[in-house]
Length: 438
Image (cartoon, rainbow, N blue to C red):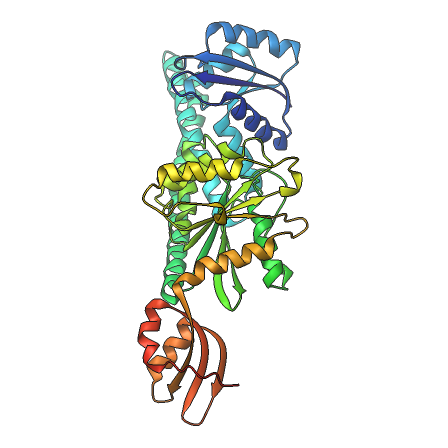
């Protein structure tokens, strides 16, 4: 379908219109929309009837004919009445960024949870639009005493609305059950003291590729790899994999990619997906350093994590796609300076927070794994313990909580070579033994 994009620069918001339209085009193309033209307008605030001004509506009418366009896509959310008014004036299909994102999410959803979240969000998006049509039909069709076509149409829309409301209720209940199970999983991980590392970043920044690279470094089982592809929202689900590096185990979690102007109907599910990030011990901010909009994309990512109160968590900056760079980038310094503005009471961030990788050639992956180990091991102690067989509770604690590197059964005790967190180490310190048994 041939599409015309419409973007508005709002002076008070000082929004980056060129970046936003660039992203809108990238969202439209995977859904087989061929972008044939883009128009722009500067405004103080949206027109309540048509969002854009009358002159731009007239300009659009001409462009639709000139370019034989099938659809007009607005970069901002439209109200149900604005959407309807524009379709009547332009005599063509009109959609907004919210609907476009819902479409692409629907296409990409793989798991039951993701499909439910998208279906719920789409129904919430459609419900007020259906209600608007129903109210207008009620006003128009109320004069006839007999059952006219409008009366029949009104009944059908009432039924459609009731179905949407029932589905919204059912989807919400089903998602609540799934989320309860996820919450229990998070609690079990916390109880077992297995550190969690969360991958966050803009859509198509390379999070899934980075996860697979780390898995390749530490695992041989290819079926544990996650789906990756050079496309927007290739991953809509949260994937977790256990990784071991330098005898330290941790859970690596991949999350859905960020995007600007996320539909309000998706915000709740989007933030809920990030609950695991809030519980992480370390965050890997994945940034496509080759993107001309890398800094803006990081800002959006960081702002979301600030909103869910996860920006205080220790982090590493992981810059991907370094093979596409043609010159030295200033992006790392820009990002570090940006973080410092919002985290003035924390440690001063320097370049040691940054890791540069090329997932295609696996360059820098071991350096990244080492950096993760260095950050996580700050709260862990490598020690040697001699535990008498009579100390059943202590043995259970070690078996459940420690990363056991070696274990030797002797006559009166078990000799352990372990890595364990500082909190549990205090309980075990009295059993520490310096001599290494070989």
